Length: 475
Ligand code: NAI
Ligand code: MG
Image (cartoon, rainbow, N blue to C red):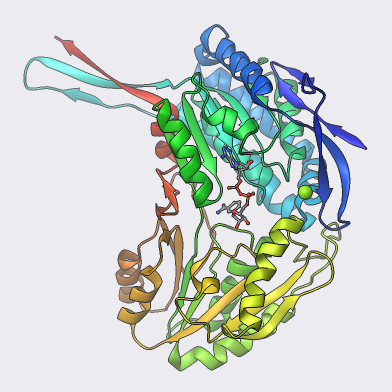
């Protein structure tokens, strides 16, 4: 079996204890690799390496152009190794290899290129003061960044954290999700090949509680914690972070509302709504899993939506034609099918879908589920959507906003005034109008309420990954 190691201070290493765990391919449901299992000792070594690289090494002292050139070189290597990286994520968590190859990997390369350029081109501000002084801002690297990532977009979300952290001159310790260790080690290897100094990007594998994750989040030598994952995990990490007053950036769960109005372009609405909840087998924090459709188009929309859901090609994620793979792990599959059992027991009516052989769940469309039921209120994180009719705009907005989550929402309408009005009224970090998942990396990205703390993207990432400093000078 393949062995997936930590990467600490430029070396691919196992844990001192020799401890390992297995990584399972959710399509074959068999272990395919062994992974070094890190704990406090490995985290201590990795944080110490990152600290040395930050305090004494060249990385934070380089100019933006030089550091940016190395990050562009890393992006080149990511593109050159695209097939290998895509296959790593597909084997670890079952995402269709075509999605990994054409979406996740190119976006990973783009993350490195974008943040390298954004940092180089950023400007501070100068403030001429009335008092015969002037003030200006400096954005200096924060230090050692701990990045804790989830398994749904392993490589892509890791790079979304690592790229801005590195571009601003920080050093990083990454703890990838235990379900998806492979691509992180490959990425750290490519970073060394690109010429990033040892200790700048370290990877420690392990679990969360009582393992590498917890050790990293309570470490006193960590200056920033960036985390994506479940809201409950965010609460736990937040408590550990506050013991050391370490700033955090959290992108947490979601229960995206998708509002389709009578005046929507239905072809467009159906096509995006399908992607919004079935892409990546619904294992997306941004999933449009609560679908509200105005009464006048409810039946027609549902007919088309169900037909499109049934047409999705489910199967072996390594087959380039596959659009829907298995769920990422047995544990997660059990969680998702638990919601389907609720529905079978009378919470709503399934128009299509349900569980299939292996760790698969078919694209599932549920109607008549009460708005206060578990399947409507909780993050299912699978290919399951509940559909609800509505009559008025006011009712749609009120129902959409009635959730502890507030990551994103979608609006489908051809009425310009309504598009603006509803976008303003929705309680969410991102609103997509007549589309889904289109990103400008300069835009703020994050969630309201239980969906997160802080924003990342462009200058928002700069705020988090630097110590902004004011210098005030008497003229
Ligand atoms: P999780 O939030 O527990 O794990 C995400 C990352 O946090 C992993 O790297 C994990 O090792 C780490 N972690 C967990 N507990 C930690 C702790 N106490 N200290 C430090 N690090 C810790 O998510 P998990 O267990 O993989 O999935 C559970 C459920 O969460 C899923 O079924 C899904 O519904 C939801 N989820 C939501 C995501 C989102 O983006 N909204 C992403 C991943 C999972
Ligand atoms: Mg796995």
